Structures are given as C-alpha cells and as structure tokens.
Figure (cartoon, rainbow, N blue to C red):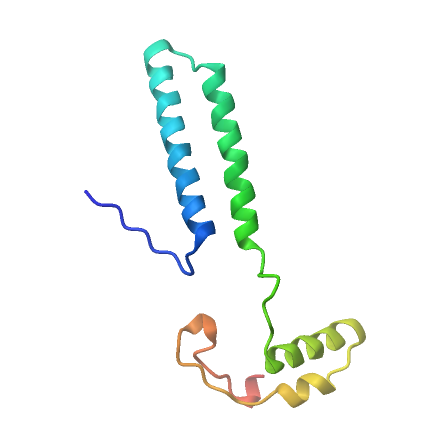
Length: 120
C-alpha cells in the first residue's frame, strides 16, 4: 500500500511538518504497544509524545500565518479599504465602485454564479 499526500505549496515547512508528524505517529504507536503489553504507558513516552504534539501545533500555526512579504494587488487593497470604511463608518461609496459584474467559472465557492440585481 502506498501513501498519497496532496498539499498545496510545499517547501521546507511542509517537509518539516511531515517529518514531525511521522515522528508523532511512531511515538504514538510505541505508546499504544506499551499500553497493550503492560496495560499502562511509560511516562517518558507520554512526555515525548507531548513534546512532539507541541511542535506540531507550533508548525501548523506558523504555516497558517500569511507570509510577511506577501504583496497585495491594487484590487485586493482597494477592496479591503472599501470594506473597512463600510464596516467602521457605514460608507458604501467605496463598495458601490467595486460592485461590478464578474464571472469566475472556477468553483461555486469562488463565486461561480452571479445573482441578478433584483436579488442583490
């Protein structure tokens, strides 16, 4: 049986996450084997598993953060500013300029369908 892993991006963080996860599964398998054999797990194994778990959490948090040097396009920046003005002050003028019809035929989640103006 082969394992198939599909992830977007890649890079050093992903490789490190996969290596830490492999160590976690190995340590957890050892703990389960101890429980089956003796009825209880070794405290050192539990501590090792807890350390690996903390490392996994730190890596997943690091990977969830946006890149520090990520540059927004002018369209994204204008949209963010318009939404900020609307949410803070109720100013709809910025959103009205951005309210143009566009079609994204990717997936439904990306806005594959357009609602007619009557339903807007």
